Image (cartoon, rainbow, N blue to C red):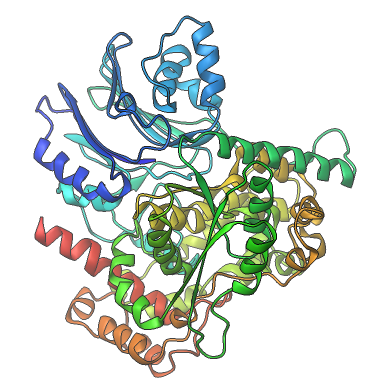
Length: 595
């Protein structure tokens, strides 16, 4: 797990090494163990390493294979690297390291661009091919690892975060109108390739890019999610047996591909508790970690009742952290500075603060993210299914944060735009390869929306502390299996029925059958006291007013009743407005001015 960056020139000039050093420095928190550089003609690479597999210097990056004439920077983990290594050794390849990084190099040499189809894991990597002076970029199937870039006629720059690209300089920081509309409609999600800034794009999941030395570019999609029923009819028990087999195999892959101990972020919910149960079968000492906050508006702010219960049941070495709201408020600027893109979800702050504590003990943890999207655990899925109307109408009534009319009420005339998000969602739902409406919805969530909400937030907030978070429920074989299930099987018994069935007998029914919890951070939902004053100060700041994004009448309406305006999935509209402005002030205004 690491931070990567680089520059490829198309204009015969040498890469800007000072800019590359600034970019690499911005990635230091993602990789505290080693810093490295490589340059060759028009190409320069930078890398910050978090050593997890092969802790020796032989696995440092950028990694150069002089014999194969390939250089690589890589962020992520390839869980089946040992099997691939054995196959490559049989083919005649010799290895100088013991980790997964060199396996990517050899696999690329052996199988070309198709090597990505052989990888089980999370990855964003870039390979410089000295043989033809081409650059190959790849991102994993579900976008667990990030890869951003900025491109013009003179050069390509890429990095693990937009902040690194901004530190390099020369980025168009004007706001993308379409991305803004998506951001405020899809609770912070801006689907790839866009970001909130016009000059920065992100490589979509399951895609590769190839650049020639002259700047010619080819983009390919190497994986799609099939959400149709199999030809052979399967019984409910068949589906449950398959889920049990594939999930266990996924957890084993995630457990074994590490040369350091692995812990679990234990919320006390079904998903993380099941991961504890599966890991506890293979280790006598398992570390688990939970966090909680102060109550606001009588809303519970921790799940310690359940996490303590699970930790005691499996005799884990449990670490529990309670943070006062005043301390969380003081950390918010740091939290926002680590967001690759503005993320209004409340639990971003919780993951950041938990990540800090966990990083004192561990380098790798498993987390339960993705299970709700893959197996239909959210309350809005059955509500969509019960609706009438077109697919996009059924989706929008229960998912969109605000309708287009409210968006126009919120934004100033300079940011008026047609309803581009509804058009985009409609196009996505209509893509072939889904049997029925809920297949369309769940596929959209897993392949496009989830990537830029829970998946991105977990990566950002753990890697801010040099902590690798692995997500077994996003093993692509498990995702492929779930996508072929009848939706009614996934939504049975309130959702996630196959996961509940696997958990029976492994964890207590009281944990399995409890009402679904959400990582509670009520101080960001019910904005009161010092939190409200901080938000008021952001929205009334000179920078916000000068930026001219929001109509003042809309801002004043929300400030007059800060707890009255919630989205359909119970997000604070006031926090959402302030978060975007705060993110711009910290990550764009300051970086661009101070560079």
